[in-house]
Amino acid sequence: MTRRKQPTARQARLGSELRKLREAAGLKGLEAAALLGTDSAQISQIEFGTAGVSEERVRRLAAHYSCTDAELIEALVSVATDRTRGWWEEYRGLLPTSFLDLAELEYHSSYRLDVEFLHIPGLFQTEDHARAIFSYRVPELPADELELRVRHRMARKAVIEEPARVPYEAVIHEAALRIRVCDRAATRAQLDRVLEFSEAPHITVRVIPFDLDGFAGATNAMMYAGGTVPKLDTAVRDAPQGAGFIDSEAQLGSFRTLFRKVESASLDPERSRDFIHNLTKEL
View 1: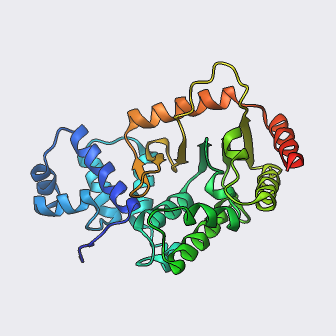
View 2: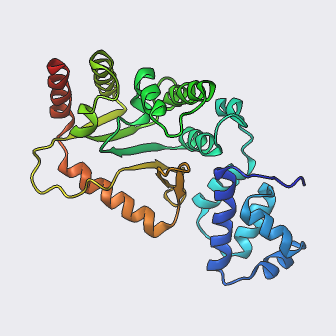
């Protein structure tokens, strides 16, 4: 089997989950290899995502690791056998791999949660808004890459539009709604876009106003993607070098708790729409 030079985040996640199952079973790589009749190097490549793994081997490994979680096994088999080449593949070699990995993660997600304090969530951004954000980068991006990033961000919206309609909940701080990354007209158009999305039955938008008492959670911006089973959920943190993917159960539990705390502090969806509508009238 051909070895991958750079596995995608999804391929690496499959290997990581198989490693977790092996470690939970108290087995070393050499012992797992013996169970498959291969060598430890092959097990290592599978667990790092640099080598693919067949459905039959996933099921054999799960059995040898005494995994009884049928839903998790089926989810891992689905990842192992997936041959989807999504729209993001046209950007391979043109944009950082984290952009492609994020698009693939969203494509396969069962739901999405976002919390933003300084920026409009990427899935809601207009072209003008996204272009202004990417243009602010230091050092400046070449014009062709800037436009590629804008086009990629616009394409990501497919997950919350027809026919995908992934359930999506976004909590946005008033600061993100008020900061004018563009001119007045573009800012109004951006708020109108958020309002338009908020009317969709599968999308929930909540606002945290400046005058909310007792809110100390402004450092908890996050993106969270639900997997086909909870153990395959993923949290995403933005960093200067690109998006970071988090999959440890303990940290995922913390992210879910933090989201619910932020959600409970925010305005309900109807009041949030009224709040955003009033901001547009101020422009």
